[in-house]
Amino acid sequence: MTETVLYDYWRSSASFRVRIALHLKGIPFTPVAVNLLEGDQRSESHLARNPQGLVPALAIDGLMMTQSLAILEYLDSRTPKPPLMPDDPAEAARLRAIAHAIAMEIHPICNPSVVAHHAAAFDGDADDSAAWMRHFIDKGLRAVEALADQSPRGDFLHGDAPGLADCVLVPQLYNARRWGVDLAAMPRLVAIDAACMDLPAFRAAAPETVKPADN
Image 1: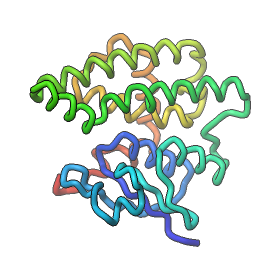
Image 2: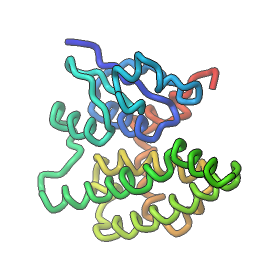
Image 3: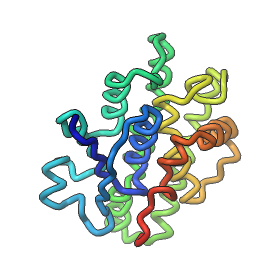
Image 4: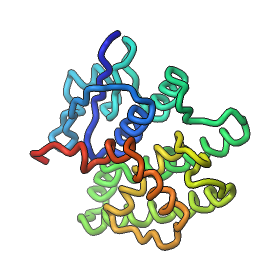
């Protein structure tokens, strides 16, 4: 069996999602840092892995995979236990909607490269960038809180065990706290985050756990 290698950056929320899933599935992997601050993502070697110049990229089963949600779905098919998605199609659709609300709505507009480009175009500074982050993260998470309240059963978005949507939620709450977003209006999300971080798989994947010593 070929070695599983995760090319990631410690603070990348998309990479954080994949680390959580790998740990939940019990899939051993070797992390290889791609330092976004130093431009490693634009190197020839990394562009060969991911032509978008993004992280993560996952080498697994002789494949090179990109896009965190696609990777999570593959891992769930490859290693079905524990499941990341329920069998019920309607519940699976609800949970995908929550994951997509974060990964496809909040994340892209708060990507550091997008924020930096916007700030540069309008002569903004670091304070303007931080305000942008807080505005869109707050707006997006308020909607996710409402989506989560549509089915309040259990400690997790998936009920009594974490799954794909929880893998996406926890990194976004990490980002929210990093940028000083007031989470008082999202009590259910905060409670789910706390339940997740009580689990070894989530703690092992956390940015502070994997942060290189020189960062």
